[in-house]
Length: 248
Image 1 (cartoon, one colour):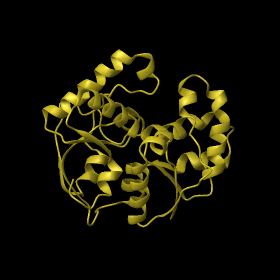
Image 2: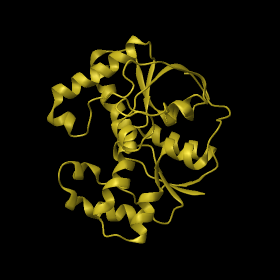
Image 3: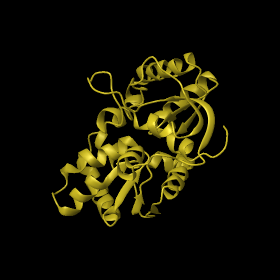
Image 4: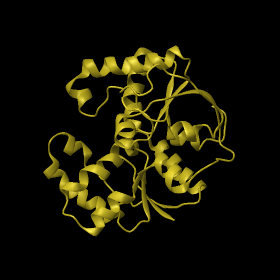
């Protein structure tokens, strides 16, 4: 299958290694991956700031850019959620409907489209804590959340268990928000920082060496707090761990 790779703005600008790992991982599992160079933002920042009409040209450009691919894959739950659920403001058309239905978050794609069952050669020797982003968990249902009754599951946990050497640590609050929330962290900095510090403390209590997530925006927030507090942990996108072949 041919996959159009959509890389969010903040990964492109600040964490390109997560984008490269996503590309390499998709190729390892047999996909033909194309990165359309004309791609831009999904439009989420504008929409979240109340300017959805101004974001419409960005939405339309996204549809034009990715409509020819079998699937569109993105290493960000928040961006995928935005395409899936907020592009309904566009005029209904076959292209719009098709792109929205074929846009997948990376873990969702690996589990439910590829049907991945093993990652030969994957190795990453470290104690890893999983941070579940709100968009990924409650929007895309990539794992269980405490407010819903149902079976326990996690796409990230399932995939990371395929990587030799990874020790997944337990957490007291597996589905608590990190406090980033995009512009929330700008408008409510004190509350945002306190929420982030709580998430970091939970990982520290259980001996994590690495915090991983499918949303680099959450990890960016946590990394900033850890740097200021000189916390001896690091952050990595889940694609980097799944793509790793060497000890940490």
